[in-house]
Length: 508
Image (tube, rainbow, N blue to C red; front, top):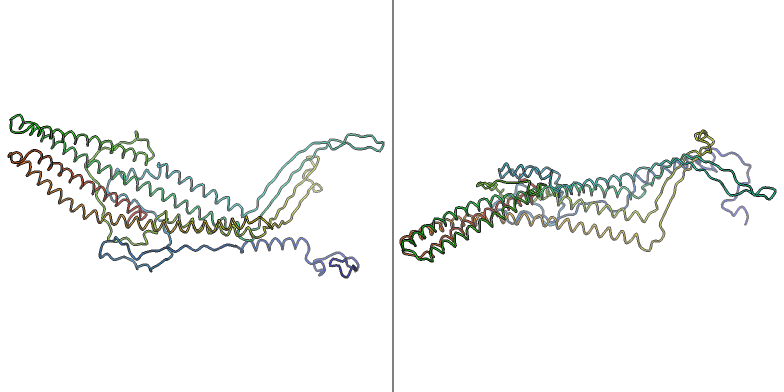
């Protein structure tokens, strides 16, 4: 083959030193090197593979099904079908529990965010996510390192000219090295990973707010049940006192010979049964108190709540709850941000199909004497790029990308299900509040009617026209009616607290 046919044939012209303007040699090596670095930096600043994030649409109804009849939404109705819902759960939910007007409840709930261990765990998970974000962001910058070494050793024996082996001298080497490495983010793998971790931090922050709200709502519900338990205790004490009087009256009538022995035993049975219920109620109340202690981060022995006859007032329920208020729920916000994190991971998986460009540099000095370590002749350096591409991995990258897409689809489904569950919780508790209000009004009539029946039956018994069994039946019906009324009041109070939790906090 002749020189003319060889692509790299040496020139036959006289040799001359290359210059920056020499068209045959192109740019100087240093200029070409910096041009390569500038090109890599430019690509790293713009190219990003993978899908850009768009918030999934959710099905938002025009109004709540269980809203009061005739109520008008204070905002325009949402369009039918799926639409984008932007979570706004970063807002402060306020001291929503203060609507019950109980200073002790205010004090207990305030301690939840400080002492509750579930909240503490969520806060630690949030800090863990922040740490992971710091790790991801660190990959955007070069890694710098330095080493200082001192070695002392001897090489193999030296063959002298007279065929006699002599020992090599002992040598010492001191080396000071500095290194730097950086991966050019040509396809956005690092930036997508940062994007994913930023979304994960936001999701963990939402989880923290959700944990606080959940613990607060659980404490409020438990406290309301405890106060209803106090009201039930008062009712039982009144019932015990009434049964005690009935037993005394019946015993006197028996001693006078105008009542049967069975009347006395029936009255005593009623009294003993009521006293047993008082003891059972004390157990239930103690357990509620223990639960409140645990929610506030205290052992059961560290909290004692004195009984009271006052029941917290039921707050006024708004005529209608706008659908947009559901966007304030932190669990919805957390689920949506996990969708964003999963979407970014698709880009991370996609970037694995492209080559990676790494730039590394090293330099330092080496000498057998510490005094010469910083002298110019003993310095060394190296600089160069490294381009790597996986050619065959038996489908590993395709499987990783398929997993990332599946996780994204899973997170979208979870997000939408979280929204649907939120709507269900609001609808359930709106129905409970309005339905229980009507039932409680009817139950008050039942209480009044039972009280009248008991009074009439007592008079008839004293007149000797009915047996004591009629009195027992009337007393049981009266107590049962009053106990049912208290149960309905408890259910309404708890439903109001659950509704506020379902809406992400205060109703305003």
